[in-house]
Length: 388
Ligand code: GCO
Ligand code: MN
Ligand code: MN
Image 1 (cartoon, rainbow, N blue to C red):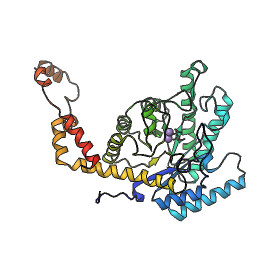
Image 2 (image 1 turned 180 degrees about the vertical axis):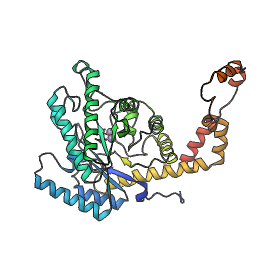
Image 3 (image 1 turned 90 degrees about the vertical axis):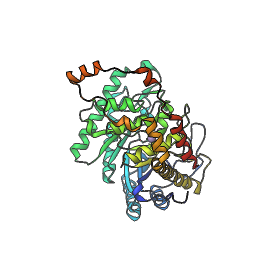
Image 4 (image 1 turned 30 degrees about the horizontal axis):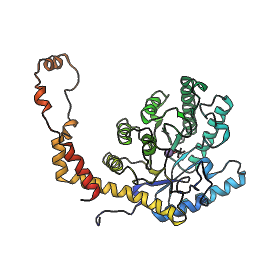
């Protein structure tokens, strides 16, 4: 472990949302177990643990109902903490789920007044994000969904979702803000069934927008895992389609409620391959932890949670590098044919190529005899994680 760097630097671009480390431990069954942390104390705490960025929902920073003068004071002390520490605002987002008026949805509420209010709330939130230099606005449609299937015609809901996203892209361009949007899929919770439940649904939706180049993804480990999907495969496709604008790192057991566990604490092999993917493709966005300390945690424990989230990422990055530099891995990869998949199969269609291919003879019985040695390759990943 000696040569592994486990202490973060600003270049690592580790970020935390105000609602993450600052989560007060309330759950659907129990009251808070911790005191809130003020935004400026939060920023100072992030500086101490070596993080780089902070993100927030509009309501985390400026609670609804705050007077104009209070808002100015909060913003001033937040700004001061940012200036004092050099912590940057890496992302801003809008809370479209807590207020009871959003119980039937925000952009997809059946009530047009609620839909308009939701769009207005996002415009205000974008203004605050812009004031603090946030380059990305995240959209998590927590309430965009149904319990009663008959309560919304899904094609209409998708149309309204699209209308809202197009409108808000128009707003950002009109204001001349240099920011992009990142949509965050989730299959369920708090709604029974959510619109745009997975990375795949969301990427397909984005392509139908007026300007798809303005909108990408903010996928989250827990959300694809809840859906029983491979987060690794989903993120890989998002990168391949140039849509990975932001990422929410945490951890999750399959088939559970959204657990928001510390990154690297649960799906160890999945996390290893995820970090390897982010590192080798040169993902340069924030590594944003959307997770929370255990409800039993308190005081210094919540900052330990923050330190360990970053420590686990760095450990995986180092392990992934060692794996990639290991001659035994290279050999096993070549037996598996990993590199060969990067070579073109036949190329662009032409009549001549098609005829040539038709005339070829394939000894498919011989082809079936090949051993790909995947057991060997996979065990090498496990050995590297174990440090054997
Ligand atoms: C959740 C989501 C949220 C969003 C956040 C940013 O499951 O509650 O992950 O934490 O990421 O609202 O928009
Ligand atoms: Mn989540
Ligand atoms: Mn999230």
